[in-house]
Length: 357
Image 1 (cartoon, rainbow, N blue to C red):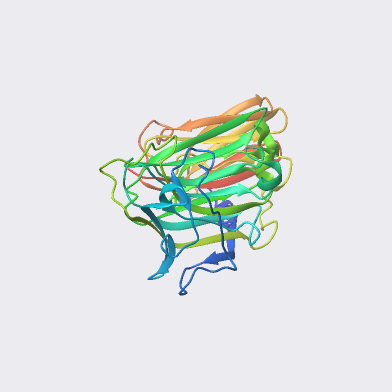
Image 2: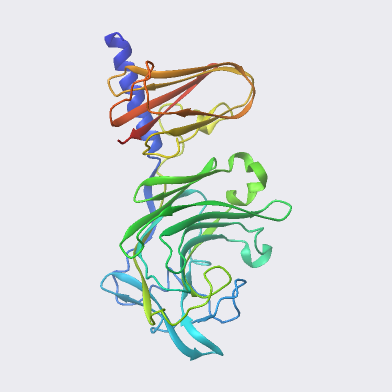
């Protein structure tokens, strides 16, 4: 590679990295640093009617069930007779206070283990009161049930009936982790501590996902019992607490970033590889609007091509390739950051990935 081409490549690479970090403008947060829960940020759901899931708790707005302590929001589940129920807890929401469309939303949390516990951090469509569920759409950023060693990422929507799609990831929920969703007009992507583990494509409302292009609000809650986790038993310790250190929402600082990223047009669409970081394999997904000659190449940070794939006259639509972490002569590459570039017709896009041995 000549010096001039290398300089162009590095400039393009820097622009691409900036484009990937698109959600850099903090638009809303609650750091839970005050003495009381902010009524400017949060409302409560109150009641004990099962909430559509055969839950056993009565949600209250009492200090016994939610409070600020040492810079954390505490949601506390208790075993007590209240409102005709045998358990109490809290469910906080930003409906009527704050809603948003597209962005990065994340929270730093830790949760208890216990049969029948069901803490969750999720988004619900702002039109839920009028449209109902699942037409409003639901994005479950994190759900955990009972004593499981996994957390759940799920999206729910309506497509001639309820559709649900998601994934799980092993996680010690008793320790603090950052649970994140990045939500754009193209995809919803889930992360734990910055590591991606699921992605749902919603581009142009594919598969009936029109719901995910409307405003959503935030919910934090801790259910007790229900059809999914089952009921508490003699091993369940009460009271117990979900701790939320902070909740933050970011959006793009500006509209279209430098670099002419075709994600913002009707040309090609190159998605984040999954999983990322990866070992030993990762999948690269992309979409093209018309029949095109497609070339995808992987480079190291010095600009050296490591591997490439060509797809002559590929049909319009979504396609995937898998990279097994081997170079062109089928030797394993070193751990580190790599760049993958897609060219189709006159359009191109570049993204980064991390290979970890």
